[in-house]
Amino acid sequence: MSFDPHTVAAILTMALVTYATRIAGIFLSGRLALAGRTKAAFDAIPASVLVAVIAPVALATGPAETIAAVIAGICATRMPLLVTIIIGVVSVVLLRTMMV
Image (spheres, rainbow, N blue to C red):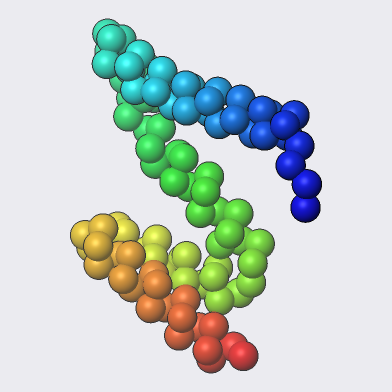
């Protein structure tokens, strides 16, 4: 493996830009005066990002993950977050072992 300074510079630049956009979001969101639909849209961002991360894994990996995601989704409507996470993890482990 060789050391390529252009590759290292590209990686560091991408890391810096990624970090800058995240920090900018934190600083800018505190300065915005939000009301009505805009506030509701900003309040929905964390849940939207979570679904965007979980949905591809739940739907593209296998039946055990899909079933466990449905179970966790049902639990999320009635139970606290920590209990939902535990049930989701336990159900995916049990379903994977049963489907082997």
